[in-house]
Length: 238
Length: 319
Ligand SMILES: Nc1ncnc2c1ncn2[C@@H]1O[C@H](COP(=O)(O)OP(=O)(O)OP(=O)(O)O)[C@@H](O)[C@H]1O
Ligand SMILES: [Mg+2]
Image (tube, rainbow over all chains, first blue to last red; front, top):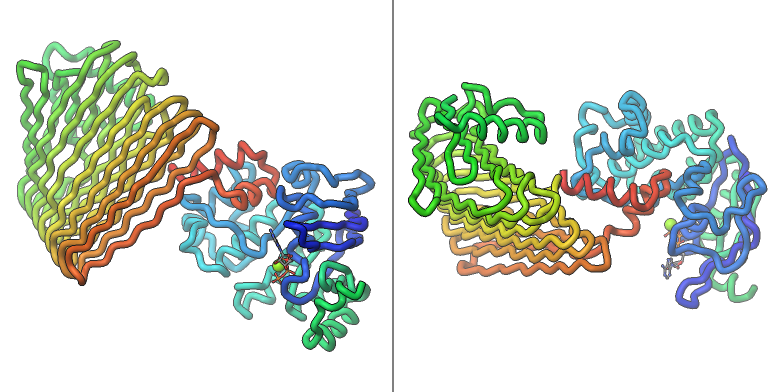
């Protein structure tokens, strides 16, 4: 169980996350939806523990253990990982080396993971994870990398962004695959096809959980309301 | 293989060190053209068809080596140049003159084995002419003593004739640098191409100077010069990349990446772009700074420590 309790985070005196509580279980899929700039990625970074995203208030628990001050590497070793919205580029590093993570992971497994994300191993193992990889290709490599880690909890920040429509099925497949293996998947997405894969969703607005519940309901509400909402008002009223 | 009489022992010592560092056994292979210099002596020479090597040692110790390759020669196996120094200290001055004919294809693999030297000034000056339509690759790898007493200077001047191609890789990443000064000055004629790449890893109080110059004098000539320096501890590094677009449709790109880690480092880079023809096009890219936080944290979110992540990133950059 991964729990956020009343998390607050501000940057340069901007309140970005204004008291958020969430609960995630292993082997289940969760959705985080909301308009641009409401704080979805920030929640992901906070869970991962990135250095710029130490919370001002609130606590994070992993199975009763308070991990609020735990460094990122230790969080990863305890089974939390993150698929970045815009994965970093690494000059000179081959896809093969990157995915094998300094020989921590076997080549056979790497090849299997590439197949899972629809990248032919023969074509991609020796490509570089640098600027020359297209946005979608880079994202797929990163999805493969996350799958290889076999995490207890994986935050997927817009796994579909930059990826062609044809690959939406692949992402849905990957989410199922992770779920079957017991990973708690937290998907941040703007896409309905992906959001409805989750059992439970959080609708974020202006740094707060505006609504939560069964995903189909949340997605319906989001589609109907948030498109036209000036949503900044919400935060100010509250 | 001609091992020069009386120098068998030095030959064997050098080749042993080389083989240990590289796991490459080709220095003893008679099918491989080789030039092996120990100190101020040429201890081994081996030529192949179409290639002529002459060496002489001047009274003051200057070693002069002429390498001529006939027109239309294709050398299938890389030519090995191995220079080493087995005494504790001294000076090694080398002058290489390359005359590479037209329609030649050749690759040189050069190694400097300076692993057992307390204090040495190694100076190597090369002049290379690359004939029309020829394709030349030059890889230079250095192995220096860990105590940092080696001072290497390699100065290369080159002319690439019409439609010729030259690529070079200069690597000093596996052992300590000491002090190094690399200068590459390349002149390109019509349709000639050059691709220069240097990668250096500085440790402790190493001093690194790199200067790469592309003179794009020929129409449609093009060149890329890339330098990557990883400066740790109190390394000092200074990189200058210059490109001169002197002819129509000449294109040049220079790039310098200096990654720093350590409080005492001091690095700088100066790009110089000068266009003397309105149809020439030059670009440059430079970055100086720490390893990017998002790169580190991406790997940390996979369970690597910050140090492991940094090493992993740098290994990629310098490989
Ligand atoms: N380092 C920072 N400094 C200042 N403001 C920041 C910083 N990082 C994020 N923000 C702000 O915090 C808010 C939330 O950003 P976040 O990236 O979490 O949004 P998001 O919901 O993921 O949006 P999107 O759908 O566009 O990805 C935004 O208004 C953003 O401008
Ligand atoms: Mg986002």
